[in-house]
Image 1 (cartoon, rainbow, N blue to C red):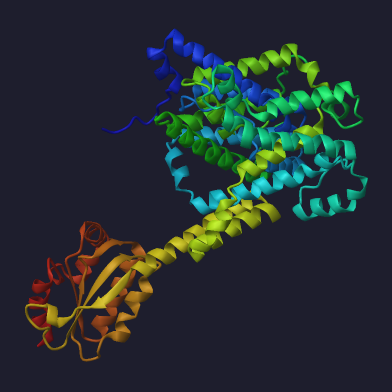
Image 2 (image 1 turned 30 degrees about the horizontal axis):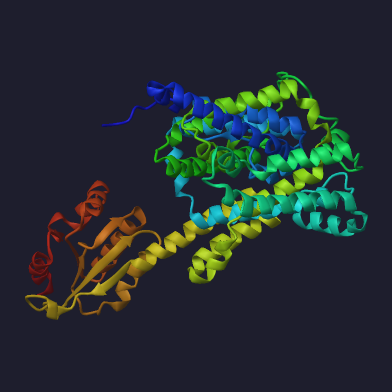
Length: 557
């Protein structure tokens, strides 16, 4: 049964069909837990991206609500993500915050169009080494971007270039602040101990123990570091000293200046945001599917991501996508419907409305430690160790994407990675294509004099036509007939067909005849549709090899 051309059905509608009070309670508890987890991350991501902390909170509220309410996954939590830190920072440095907001809205339109045209499943075809390469590259860049606040180095603004960042950090290393370093080091140590020792020991030991096993250490670090900064009056950078705190209240609607000329300038960042959002959200949704034994709708998810990213910038937000850490927390806390994601957004809204002044004393060193820990967990570092067991082509794709992400930018890295993937795919497929001479001893009757016969295996396409061209060199000048057995040829493209036609013409000029036998459905349909069989002669395309040999005896005499 064919699918409808346009389908917009959020997962929320399906889950509410058999919804009950027990599930509502579980979803609300899970939503509140995720909301607490999202609070420090949203502010940290915004600050690391070069924006004010409230931009992260507004994004988590608005985009988080829309992605849950309209998305194609039952449990995915949307909001600002660590993967966007490097991308957003680079865009702000090159184009400014106002143009970032326009690029995000344009990316939202592109994402919705991708979902509308049912391209969601195509995102899954991005090769694994490219995803691992840019993910690890982003993790490195996030860690480097946080060294300034981790060590309390007084640098007004970090450059976007990797080597410029390293040079600036080394040049100003002597001005590091020991109090910021102490707060950051203790925060990072607590995060490691909490995740590696405390949480595993708490699993299955009672209600409060289970809560502690779910609650990330970032929340506790934020609370303890803020209390220490306030009680000890530490002279270190905080959200209040750098940004003036977080405004208490709802954001206003702002319409940025827009022009077609600007759209053309922002094409590259728009494409980057849309592609990264699509990849991250669908990867996150697939992980969520495995956790709850469900299957999300990738096209609905992309449309929801598009709506969220189109609307959020008008309220001062930043790009949003599905977030793996918060989604996993949601599932482990008992969330099984989009109601949990909606509850998480409402909790953050309540925090902004009633508790925003409390963020004044949050130390930036503690947020830097949280992001450093997140960057370590984000990277798939074991993949570098596994490289020695993998093919050279895999290594080249992954390492090229990784180094280009770090040294140049994510857009270039993904473009080059995909180009390499295409080139290597063509190489692998062409290496599987081969042409072998048919052994006359395997036939029921010997090959007639003046007849050469070959079998083509694999796919005859633009990357493998040279193997067909080499047939003329292998064929004896006294041969009057060349038989090509095509029963093992699985596909034929227009370039391969053109090579066949060129072979036919060359043989005719030398007084020889080309015969084909046993073509499969796709090659035969292409030959018929393009008129090749008419030029060859319908009688010269036989069903099997014995028939071709019988036909060859006519020309070989």
